[in-house]
Length: 293
Ligand code: G4P
Image (tube, rainbow, N blue to C red; front, side):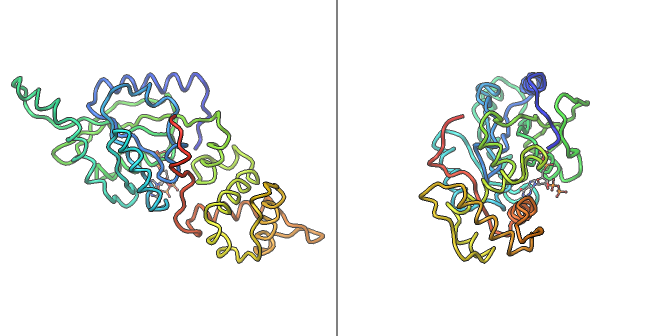
């Protein structure tokens, strides 16, 4: 993610989305299935108002399937239509237009009753950087239309992309900012690769990741790095986590003179392997811990 969000960017991004809302019937809100809350814009309800909304949990191929199913349940209980997708392979994307149409059924029926011709549902994709907006647009379009890379405030002529017979999509997605104020959100986004390593300290991010994995996926962590001991998480001593990072560093040959472990190098390896899916499908937010944004 190359964006540095400043208040001016946020205001402009918000205004741009609200301008686009006037043109469309339904918003497709893209979230990262591995972190459905942290990948959500903190002002999303305010920005979208009462515009019908479809929630897509993208990158579901990388997320823990059991937790993804629970997240879908949470969103559905809130009254939203939620679908899991994988934009890179296109899994489930054919459901999008069907569900979007359902959300608009009443409105369209009213229009037809007034003598208006039936027309395709007009949709806008919104989401934070790196959540998969361009990948999804290209997949839905069946060709390369959206350039990857985000810059708030950069506009170009907008066009409608036809998706089957039922839907038209704006070719430029709405780019939103994540919830920066919460440091844990930053760590989750960084651990999954949604924000670049230069923004946060790599050792801090790896520390967060190891602590989370040791708590929620301890067997996978132990197996991947052939760890002899896992930390005693009950005593909440940060040194316990650092000791695990050192064990990993030793296993992966990250040593400096005097036999000390190069923690920065070890951290880089931990994050690379995690993001490459070497520890399997992982989710970094558990529904029970959910608080409304
Ligand atoms: P954005 O427009 O919202 O900023 O996101 P974009 O589509 O550029 O996607 C960001 C990264 O996430 C891309 O990887 C993309 O391939 C990947 N991605 C998008 N959707 C999915 C998905 O459902 N599953 C998986 N596994 N990955 C997904 P990249 O490494 O930045 O680029 P590249 O590897 O595609 O070249």
